[in-house]
Length: 184
Picture 1: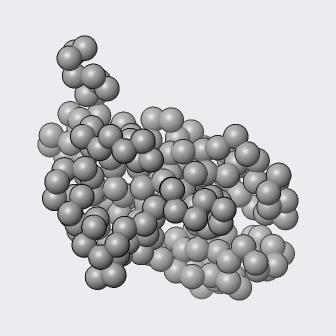
Picture 2: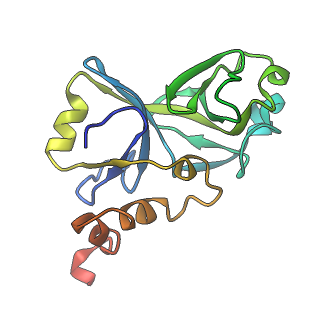
């Protein structure tokens, strides 16, 4: 599968970089210049209300900031799914299907009610031209289809295992691999 907006990058056991070990990344943009995504399974302990108080009632549970990746961690991206595809809010940028980015400088009252779920990520994951394809070729990432539930689920602790488990063939087996195969 090609890494396109809306696909997931699931860290393989060989990916040891602590920024991405055991991570599931939602790709939001991918072209010849590089790729950008957010890590879905790294919630922080910081409530959205503590940083972006106005958005606290709009975000999905858990209502905390998520660590989106190691790039620009002092900034935030809001990923949301529309309630009605014909009623995109002010500050909406589509990425794939009914999922897109919400400009956090938009007035909350113009967005609230137009999105079914929203999550705020501090930072993002980014790759330069050809970098992601090289990492995929070396076996660092599995590229798989996403489901809306992957992006906005309230419990993310088992996301990587569950995404792998629903894949066909050998990828489903990877979901049961222990952290240290010698302990098997």
